[in-house]
Image (cartoon, rainbow, N blue to C red; front, side, top):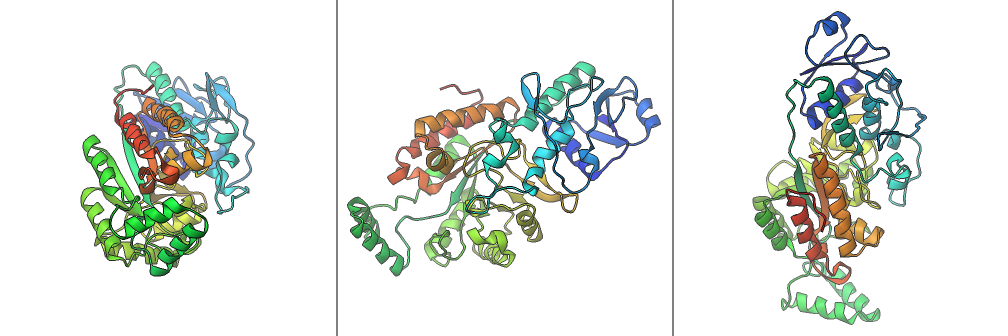
Length: 440
């Protein structure tokens, strides 16, 4: 255990110290505001305040963790050895910046509360972020800082026994379109044939016909392939099913279709299942509640996990809605248009609500990459994508973090724009589950 002294213990101080020490470094902490108690302690201790008290490990504090609300902060990027950092300290500080204030700024998504330009779907984009602008988006910077801090602590307190956490991999699969052709309404099926015919998509027309007369398997029905990888490589797999009503952006098969409901029930038996709230739930809690109840009616168990469709998250409103509906885990923390670590960490963390200044019960699982980001936004080939996946996995592996990927069932179809991506998924799983850094 490390004793932490600060002149004031705020909710922000408790939150970020617990994240860095407990969740990343596996070091228990005890807080005190009593100087005498701190000075008398003979074991490892760290002071986080304005001036050093004695011979302890000292980090000069920035004002951020003692403030409330949000304000426009002046941020200047510097280097800690070769690693970017900000909120510089003075020479008496054991490290050259306030690691706790900087980590809080990134993990709380402080910048997303400030004025910014949204994209056409109302999302905060990678290009608006500090991480993108200063080229550290693809590094779990908070975890890197934490392990560099650990090295400094080991040098200061060499006799303390430090534990290490284990690297983990989670494969998540969004089901936006459970089938390409089957189990659609008569109107949608007829419209599909007409569209293929007049656009001279002869191959699509033929494939649609062959699937509908049961002479060919629906190309998006890749669930047994995914479960086979899940079993062979013993990976944690989570499916997020879209069951909202049909809209321009929500085009899945109706959740009233018995085949779809049976598939969801089957996936519950072999993997984890969560809700994929539809496009307009970001602004509509009643709709979100209805979809949650619909999913619980299918699975006969409480819904505890979710990921927003189109990754539409507006902080803090979207997360407040999830909390109100007792959803415990969210997997939406990532960008649609760029790979990397939106919160600059590869460690699951509890959402801190800057409006109410509290740590909430909602646990956020940040993902590192999405298949449509690689294919549609970044225009990478499967081979180029594998290199990107390898690099991100190695970054997470270096800090024993949690590597989370986002694929869709349709990207394993090897169909149309997903030609070659089924093989990529298996290669990704091999890299992600390897015990060593991957360079092939």
